[in-house]
Length: 294
Image (cartoon, rainbow, N blue to C red):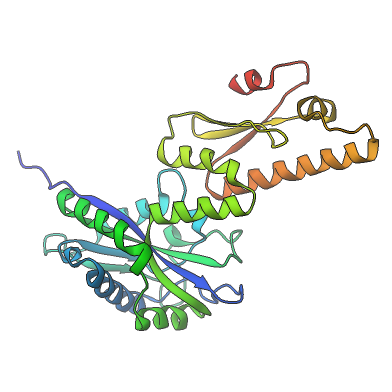
């Protein structure tokens, strides 16, 4: 019995830093432009890591919010790999494969970005580098070493993306998913969301583990079994947990409203990362952590 050769992959991204906060006017490049872009990206990457010539490049020429690339199971790259496996020419050596929009501008369903996640300063296009495990490991290590310092795309690559997507672009760079995760962790820290990142990271990298956010006055959250459970506290339970240094009814009401807003904010970030959030009402006469464990 013969076995198909084992394939490993580096999951990468083309990151567009947008100017002025305006989103691109088009969701994806058309198919011909996508093919030309993939050739340029292959050339740029080979210039950084020559061993990439042994690997296959597969590109989705559609752009997404970074949170869509950082979801459990890596769905963007998984869809890309499924299409790669069905593309013709599998036995003809390393291919450069691109998926773009149809002639009428319609984007294939696997690469339709979430319309709720628009307006950010960064958009990403996913790509895969596929090949023999040894080659992929060597390329992956090399890319992790060089992309942060030297990962800028070629000028013609950036210009094609800018013109093809109808975007005002300040920079176009290549990064691995690990690079993007590190950047997002730092960004969340600056946005006072740093306490949430360990839950997201656990969902991405160790989904069978459990992780808590238990740091009053933050909402109480527990990640386990692929979802986050968030404690719902009524005003009395909230006051008992956080012990605000005031008895003023108006200040207490404002503090509780801020807590509710914070809950909504954290839930929205988690859901953007594809992590389901369920709410558990926790009466103030129970141990809250024990309640979330049930």
